[in-house]
Length: 253
Image 1 (spheres, one colour):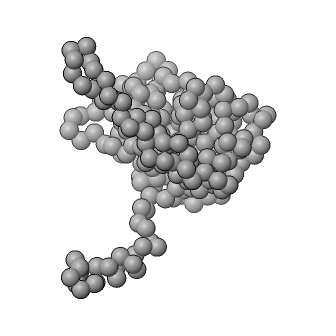
Image 2 (image 1 turned 45 degrees about the horizontal axis):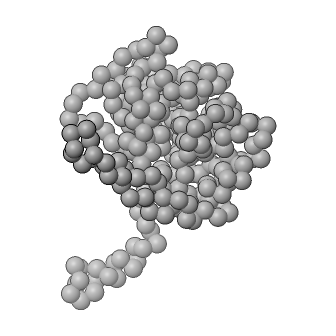
Image 3 (image 1 turned 45 degrees about the vertical axis):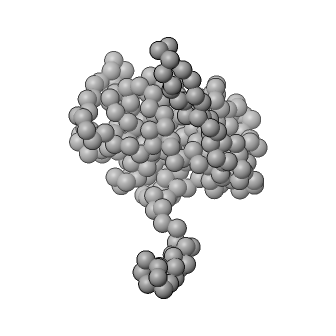
């Protein structure tokens, strides 16, 4: 079995190193990852400049692009053989609820799915993560199941692991995405030349975070596993939208 590993924290991140070391016990692993931290890159592709890929002393391939660039490049031309699975992580910090809209880690996994392969995005849910070995062991367990053919090929699993020793993990829960309050305001500052600059504010606090959500599972000491779908259509609103469009004087009336 061959696994393509990537991330958004860069090819030198401790999370990626821990992930690769663990996965190499069960499969061949090839790493194609950004040359620097590209957190928050979401699903962006680099279209206005060429990409450069260089092999490091460890055998990793570093790319001067986004996480999505890395996975796309790897599968569509860089690698001699296609992988059986794409694993993105281990991210330094959670990707819970609305975070998945911005996450480069989740985007790397989504790109693997777009290109026809099952994929996992794995995050260690702490702003200062310590227990990478916990997330690595959880990933090995999940990957073993995926490679065993027990999940469909269109699967994207968003995995968030509490930052605690593996022995303290209470179990694994299937969850849905929770929701946060809106983001905090931007932080306005002055640069050394007196010009105004802006820092994007922190993510909002938990809002929809009760039982059944990824927030609640991680807070309770469980690994959260959320299945994601690339189809963003809101099917429940289709009938109402059609009626609105057909109203007299409306766009479709």
